[in-house]
Amino acid sequence: MKPRLLWWLGTALLLLAVHTDWNVPFAAWVFPIFLLRYARQVPVRRAIRMVGLSLLLGQLFWLGVTGLLFVLSGLLAFILLAALQTTAFLADRLLAEHAGPLKTLVFPVTLVAGEYLFTVITGFGDFGALGSTQSGNLPLLQTASVTGVYGITFALAWFASVVNTGWADGWPRVKRTALVHACVLGLVFLAGGARLLFDAPTTQTVRIAGISPSADADKASADALERINVKYWRAQEVSAADPAAVGAAFAPVTDDLVTRTRQQASAGAKIVVWPETHARVLERDQDALLKRVGAEAKQAGIHVELAYALYTAQAPYIRNVAALVAPSGEVSWTYDKTHPTPMEPMTPGPGVVPTADSPYGRLATVICYDADFRDLMRQAADKETALMLVPANDWPGFGTLHAEKATFRAVENGYSLFRHSVHGNSTAVDSQGRVLGHADYFRTDQQTLVADLPVQPRTQTVYSRVGDVFAWLCLAAAALCPLWTYKRKLTGKR
Image (cartoon, one colour):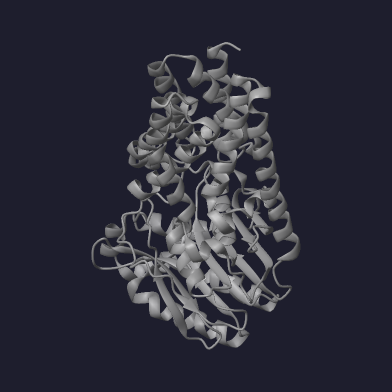
């Protein structure tokens, strides 16, 4: 096959693999095969240039559907990601030939090392991890309970490396390596299937409802803000306006959410979750809202996770808040988002995941983008969380990917997770990544997600104890690869 055709096939499959809303998980297994083959057939400089271009196109293709602000703020970071991923293809080209029986491992360890370094350098969560394309592959997904998402990246990359090596060297010369790879991959799937079968979550469940305001309430609030010439996304402008008029403009949404909270409690929900920042509250009105919801929670005997944008009198004039109201009517926690997205002009919270005991096990919360950060989500596992609540707010072209990433956190840490998003996909998943409830904001007249999630006792996982040890091992192996191959080259071994 001609190098140019290899490049086009690899790039096309790459775009299919990373697209947010109609990605093809199988494409993530296949596209590296063609790009690896291409990189081995053309001069090194061309390989770097063209493979790097492919990977950058993949990043830009993803960014192109997530909004211009995110593109501009994240562009340099994703150029770095493409460069780190290109290094893995370059390492395969330059080092694999002299790595002997370990030649097929050069690409996977360097790819994992690059993905992990990207998260360490940029603080962008686990974005870019190839393994995150496999959230629907339940047997393979269980690998995340031991290695995190990077173990799945390794599995995909190793498969591509073995196939490419067999293509280049001929299958008779690589059959022993292929057999070892097939056995290891088979054991991974077998172990994942065994975990699904024999370590299934408890049958004890709790009914959770995620609610969103009606379109009529949204319109009434928007019209009222327009009449007083206030843009809610300009926090300083909101804080400087007449508080009585602004509070009245915000009221239709909060009133509607309180009403829907009462309705879901009457329908049997024990926990009700509001979406991130869709409710907007002035600082002076916060106590009144919490008392109002507290009265509803006490009367119904439920927990309510409020999420709202809180407008303050001090810069940066806005906070992204989640507050849990217990059946006693008291506030169990008030949490500020730890990791605002690049377009959120707000001060991050202190980065401590709050927990609260309940009859259904220990509850915890983070907000939206926080769920992309593995270390933050491991805090909840350390605190023996049974159920993670994640209010969220996405936008078209992004909600699917973001919801899928949250699935990995549930498997990694062994708790059920309820992620309720306005302007995106809401999902309820158990500790093994099974999707037990799903709602798409853009495909329903009134988004409400109701799910019965398993709780108590939580599942202890290897990953929740050791964290990213696997990624660190790959990083160490990638650093040693040049020394290993140089030594073998000096001794004339292949």
